[in-house]
Image (cartoon, rainbow, N blue to C red):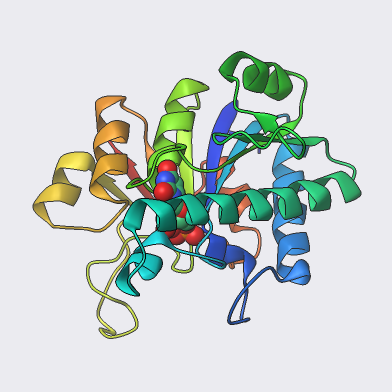
Length: 237
Ligand code: UDP
C-alpha cells in the first residue's frame, strides 16, 4: 500500500525520546523512532519533524518553581534544540539526510529557520527537524507543529503520543472507554477532547490542517497512519 500523503509534519514530544527513563534522551528509543521514520521516508514521503523538550526542561515547571516564565520558556526552547541535534545525528547515522532548523539563532550549531530552504531540503528528500518551537515564549511545540505544518504545506500533522488515539474517556481509568476513529474539530471542542493546546488546535482548524493522533510506541503505527490505515484518531474539518 502506498503512502496517503506527499508531505507530512510529525510532532514528537520530548518525552517520546525519553522512553522509560526519568529524564533526557534514550538512544535506543531514538533509534527506534528513526527506524520508523526511515520506513516512511522510503515511500517517498517528505517529512518535517517538530520536536518538544519536555524530557529536559519545561517552561511551566521552571515558572512554578519561581523562575520568570519567559526566561524558563527560552530554556525550554533551548532544550528542544538539543533533542533536535540528537535526532538529526541518529538520522544521519542511519543514512537518512536530516537537517535541523532552529527558530532561535544558534548559527554555530544548526541552521536558522528559513522557510524556503526548509522546503528545498524536503524536496531533496531530507528530513527537516524544526527546533526551538515557534521561537516565542508562552507557546508550545504543538503550536510550532501547527505553524510549521501550515508553512511547509503539509497535508497532515501526525501527533505522536503515548496513547494510540483519542478516547471517549481515559482508557487507563475507564475500561469501557473507546477510541474515536475520526472526530471533527467542532466535535472535539463540544466534547472537550484534549487534542492539542488551544492555540495549536485553533491554527490547525483555521488552516483546515487535519491532525492524526497515534502512538509512537506501537510497532509499525507510524507507517500505518502514513498509509491512511485505521490507526489512531483523525481530527478533521
Ligand atoms: N516553548 C516555548 N515556545 C515555543 C515552544 C516551546 O516557549 O514555541 C518552551 C516551553 O517552555 C515548553 C518547552 O519549550 O515547555 C518545551 O516544549 P513542549 O513543552 O511543547 O515540549 P513537549 O511537551 O512536546 O515535550
